[in-house]
Image (cartoon, rainbow, N blue to C red; front, side, top):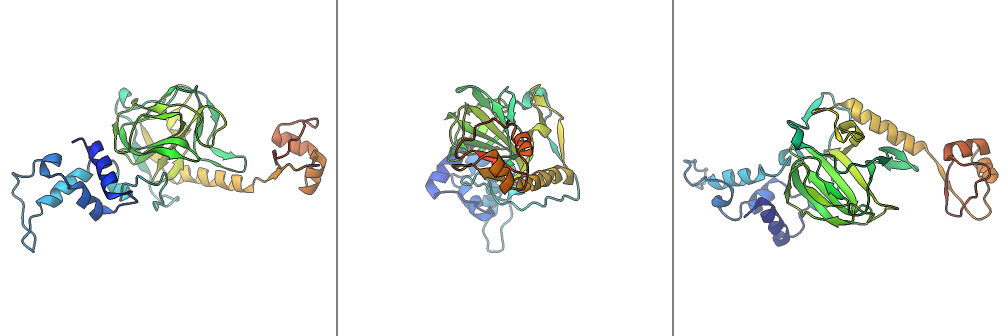
Amino acid sequence: MKVAHLLLALSLAFGPWHLLRAQSELDTLAIGGAEEFGPYEDMDVPELIDGTSDRSLLEREDSLSLIPGYQLYGGWNTESIFGRTAMPLALKDTIRLCLSNEACDNAMPVCGDVTSPFGPRRGRMHYGIDLELYNGDPVVAAFEGMVRISRYNSTFGNVVVVRHSNGLETLYAHLSQRNVETGDHVEAGDMLGLGGSTGRSTGDHLHFEVRYLDQPIDPQQVFDVQNGELKHRDFDLHAGVFAQIAKAKAEAARTKYHTVRRGDTLSSIARRNGTTVARLCKINRISTRSKLRIGQRIRTT
């Protein structure tokens, strides 16, 4: 039985996996016998204090080694897109992540221009980049790994999350179709699904994220999107990476918006928010002759 199929079968048999911790996962993944995970039957293993053999423990640990980053994350959560993994944003040391050993072990998910970058957007943080595509275009895995999430979400639409052996996770959202299931092993360049505009989306595009222990990283620090290739074979995680994110979040928090109501004008909005019409026009990229629509959001700071 393939590991992918075993993981899926276990998730159905034992209910949702919500941050199953070490012992519980060891117990469930051991089902199926030693022949499924490794030839331990000929090993001379010691007995525990109570007289039982620890052969089963070796079998269980071997099965867990097939899950990318299991020890780093301390679990395999197939329910929550983002967890609450504790990781200090102010790293004292640099963590070097190997991204590539050869040309064929990485791929751009789609070859499209960035239509919306990482960072503050309309008063909130945009934790990924939006890449241009047409409905039905193939979306491929950036690196080798195992599918942790493959389902529909009200915000991301059809979304796939892949965990990689170096601890990174990549997210692919707004797909029109998903071609993989939770527990599937994928290689770099394998098709995960087709591009689209599902979920909270106003047009066809791929929302692409890169995270480490649930902390977002600007994908353009990892990929040269214009050329469709990695910037470097290794990626250094350090305090500066997350300091940039903290700065962007603070900027997003400072940005204020006004939702246009009936009777509003640029002059009344400017007066109410202690600014000028010229300033509103500049930061919203509109002119004094622009017609306001009820429900439109006008940036005021």
